[in-house]
Image (cartoon, rainbow, N blue to C red):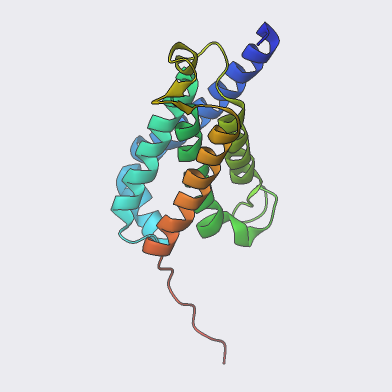
Length: 176
């Protein structure tokens, strides 16, 4: 792989990684801290809110760091895609595409999710922990079709499974 491709992958990994690390950091230590994040998650229907606030925040911190290092890239990408899938469904989807709309649309979370899944398929490049591991762990490839499948199935599928098990939005009263 040439230097341009390696630099491109490093830039993509680093920007996505920093973005989700800062997001996780803000959930824990910013604004209303983890307690405020828990109340917000609970209000969106993620029950219990404190569990999901911690899960999302820790996944963002861990997956972001893994992406920056290029370590187990499909799993890190799956973590980002999973958190963004949940955010898409419970908060952003009803508000339309554009982020600047009231309630914030889904363009931001969609881009992070898709870029992460794509990165899982592309792999981390030569400047990564994955390269040091020989692009495989226990004989399983960390890029290509396998990496793409891991990122998509574990990320999007995991996010949807989490929603099926824990998302309980409040019922809105019927007009009448």
